[in-house]
Length: 331
Image 1 (cartoon, one colour):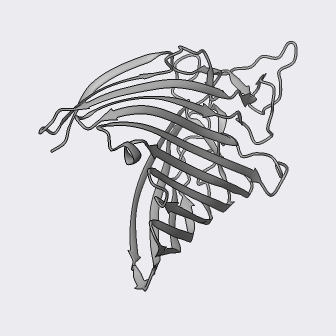
Image 2 (image 1 turned 180 degrees about the vertical axis):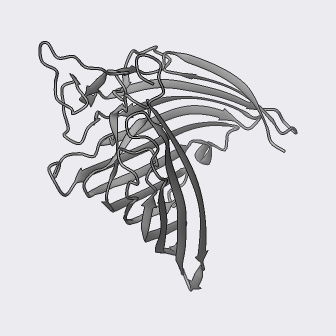
């Protein structure tokens, strides 16, 4: 609506989708090879019912089918250790409400190789490296459409991502045979995602931090209770393809306003690098013996740290200290 309350635009969207897949696990001694094929089909319709300036417009339709082949390998010939690898074509359907209609789906080749093992007593770990190549990378811009109030997505340039995932768990009970088990868990991800084409070539893909990870220390008992505390870290990340570092207020074109400029925005537009953060959380659970009932309580951001979670639609603070509890019943 305009400033007089007159309806100026009425856009209606409708989407439907279905998928089908076929795969077969073939075993050859210690090897398991699993080829597969998935098909995705979706239809998006956009109808502008009314426009005060141009009148009604015909329906626009996007009808897309994509074939996604893939193959994975698993080797189990080592004691308590498995090697795995896979390569497959991936797809992320584009949102209907993008900057244009229709946006092109994000497609690419995803590959990984790694191992998981419990060969060392009391230690379970998994290590995987990955390399992904993406075409028509989908990016959400850090502001909304002032006319509709909707998030804006665009097809940015092609990109690639290379990285590693690490997960380790250590349990003391494997050595002590005690009903008490001190445990520690480490999870870490490194992802270097960068554009490979266009004006943003070499820049990092927005909203993808270089480093993320968590460290958990806890104690559990065979009677059913467990307590733990976790430190979670997220590295700094950019919010726009240009990789603006220092936070600035901009107009709809991404340019800083000058003296005397009038900006008509529903939400402020802030671009820049979101600072890194490390947060403390804790959790306690008790599984009542001989019942499907588990009681739990957890606290997040226990130090009540004030931090910026994102610049999407303006500078957004992260949640303050939060404590919640509940009951889980498994049937």
